[in-house]
Length: 157
Image (cartoon, rainbow, N blue to C red; front, side, top):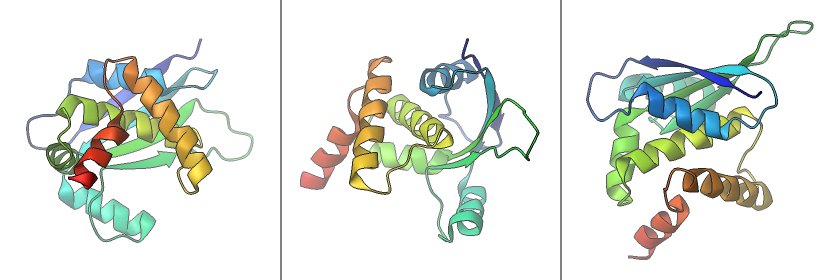
């Protein structure tokens, strides 16, 4: 059974953050590993997101989601997928700007981050297409539409 435990850490001082059961459902749906595992999902504000994004990616601005896959030392087997750090104000702002339902955008960020933890990326077009197709399929399970169509509509207007 590929059960996933979500350790939710909400250190963001504000409203609009989904409940723990929603994070659990979204993360579980995107956990494609065959083994039982655990992920930490940390909800943060602008300052922490910007600091981590600068430290780990060299970008001095906040970002929607950061993924930190767990890398076990040789010979150590611990069932940890890694950590997701999601910036609540960035997610809320993106949802408004892109005219998306807030819960749909939260779900997308969790699913997107979970796929990164499992080695998916969007560095080249082929990998991006595969990752986006999987995201669309997983989001549809929750009744959410293609998040990339919404972005294209905004770009075109």
